[in-house]
Image (cartoon, rainbow, N blue to C red):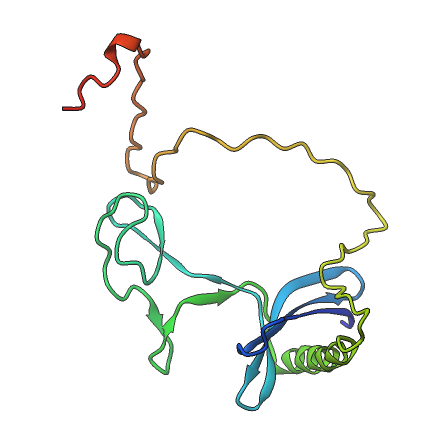
Amino acid sequence: MEITEVRIKLMEDTDDRLQGFCSITFDDCFVVRDLKIIEGSNGPFVAMPSRKLTGHCPKCGCKNHLRAAFCNQCGARLKEDQAVKDQDGRAKLYADIAHPINSTCREMIQQRVISEYRAEQERATDPDYVSRYDDYYEYEEKPATKVHTEPAETELRPPHTPPGKNAPQKEQAEPSRKDDFGAGIF
């Protein structure tokens, strides 16, 4: 396996630890996007793309972030400290989406990305500099096709019900009449 392309997007505000994003291509056929370049105490390092972990509300089953105090769907109070702790006692709030499974691969990615990051910083000093990160990747096998999209649903869905429990039934709305407007409010 070989890294055949690295694209870097430098952050404009370098006062933050996040220095940039990058995407890497393996063997001209597989892309991993949104790796982060972070300034650490020993220099920059590469963080793999990740997602926030969630927990489910015991009342309605809706997904919520692990540090949420109340459910986003039903408002029920959630258990405190739902996050799993690592061996150092820190809460695990994120999970990698893609990551190397051995140190040799991690080092290969780290060295190549940091090398390209430094080269990109050098290119960024040019007045005509344009980042290539947001360019669309070229796919020779399939030409771009127009995708048909549907408008978003306007009706709210009921909360997720775990298997084995009865799902709530939808209530049938009565046809509205102008003379009934506001009836039942008080």
